[in-house]
Length: 194
Image 1 (tube, rainbow, N blue to C red):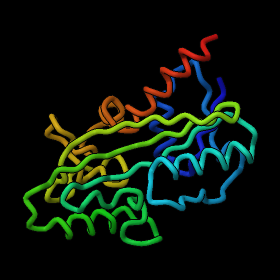
Image 2: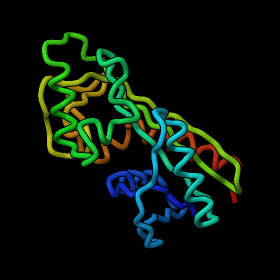
Image 3: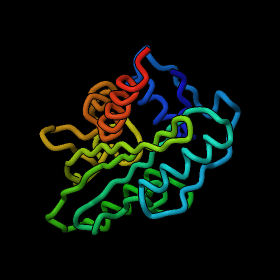
């Protein structure tokens, strides 16, 4: 099945490409020369993912999916959440975002956090949602040079490395996005097996 991934984020495309397998063909907005920024007008991951997926479905009339991901920090009442990409400003600067989270958590003992991804799939106009969560902690400082976003300050439970200290394959095996995508892939393979 051909699936259009409604995102402008090349890092997310790379991660999904590692997960998709040979049964599906991933098409990107770049493949279609679409470079307009996708709107995220709500404070809810579910609604943002649906908004983007429905917009692209209507634009291209192709089965597609989108996702929205948030870092949810317990001591910050779930922030940055849906504002994760622009937590420190509209520039969407990952370094500034991490610096803001670390500054707000300075001297806090509760470091619990989770990454949560919601994937919205639109097939023939029908909407489906899939959620993936990984729990962990916010480290006291950045560690590692791999990954993107908040990866250098997020250490998943049960691991001694941050996401940014893991290889792409190690992260893809356990990540929030991988967990949500696995649920979507399972649905597609059960409903649309050839």
